[in-house]
Amino acid sequence: MNIAILTFNGFNELDSFIASSILNRMKGTGYNVQITCPSEEVTSMNGVTVKAQQPLEFANTADVVLFGSGILTRDIGKDSSILRRFQLDSKRQIICAQCSGTLLLAKLGVLGDLPACTDLISKPWVVEAGVNVIDRPFTAKDNIATVGGCLASQYLVSWIIAKLSGIESAAQAIHYVAPVGEKEATVQHTLSIVNPFISGKEAA
Image (cartoon, rainbow, N blue to C red; front, side, top):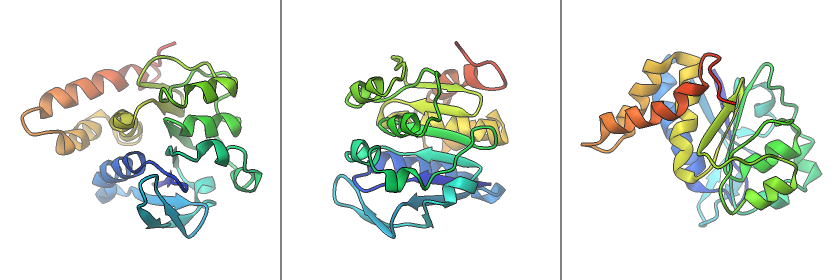
């Protein structure tokens, strides 16, 4: 199960690293989680430089594609040399975005007329791109999901794991990373957010 976590220059560490860490809890069941970048190295919004585990084209054949956010997303959304490298298909792939990553889904035509979530700073840009932004931390329809807010990563990865491996696996992954003394409450709350969007129960 190949999972591409798209990570660009100016990336938000919380988006890429939280998703990578939690999804890698599932590597024993065949999850191959890869930081996927347009260049050999990218530097975060706070100066953290990481090496790409996979080139951008890895996303085109991955089972799951997750767009992280960052301070340069608007520029990336205007960069045709990057956008034309994508050949995504939500019929055969799970495609997700966090915060400003939703803007890239819009630019790539992935969202269509679906409502989406994003962070408050990115909201005007995403609305300008023609997206109906809703005031929720998470929403999903079929194979497409979006979240708003850095700490909403847990909802997105829980949904991904639940779709691929079942709700119990998602609960176990969140239980592992949840704060001590708050584990059961965290799992319960997280699943209460994603459950309506699993197994054909998507909310309108």
